[in-house]
Length: 136
Image (cartoon, rainbow, N blue to C red; front, side, top):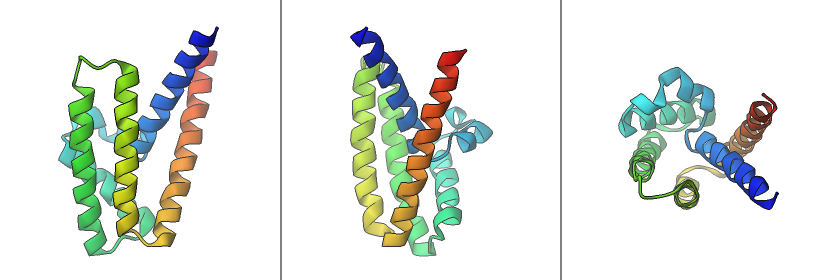
């Protein structure tokens, strides 16, 4: 029973992290993110952030560079077949924490707060989708 709970929790957490990391699951589906290069995914994400957070041109370039960096790191981890799901999830969490710190240094407090709120909403949405998936 505990193992089932942990597996479900791990799957839900992984889905939430993937949703947060890609910034918007719907956007990822529209752009077929798995077929895009890290640079293309970073541009799509940064463009969305520019729209949602009203980034300046200078912020845009800095955020883009951060998004490229972590998109490349994510690809390298996801492509490592030697790692199991739990290890990949742990590594992704580390990336998210580091990325968040870098973004916080660039964004204004209002922009950062809005970004955090959007992340919470996406996480809740991902959990809801997991619940719906489990019902099927």
